[in-house]
Image 1 (cartoon, one colour):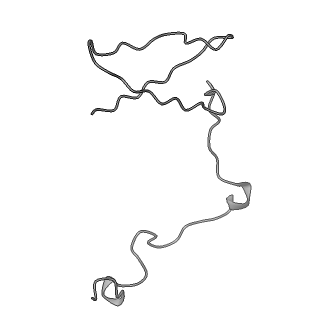
Image 2 (cartoon, rainbow, N blue to C red; image 1 turned 30 degrees about the vertical axis):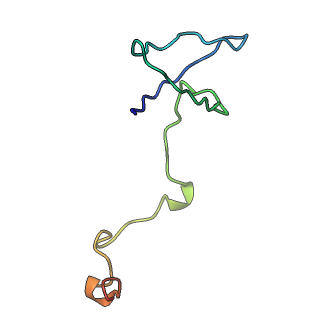
Length: 76
């Protein structure tokens, strides 16, 4: 079994606008999930909150502050 995703749209009467092309002589099971909102054509640019406007990051934010040897995750 292989999964193929197809995003389908309907017209004003709820009929499919374009049918997807499917493999010949095969059985296909379809489960339709109705999206709550139609996809918007304009995406707003993401911006940080204004509360963080004066924030400056200092130091290393990638390296964890605790050594891996201090964690007891691998101890069995």
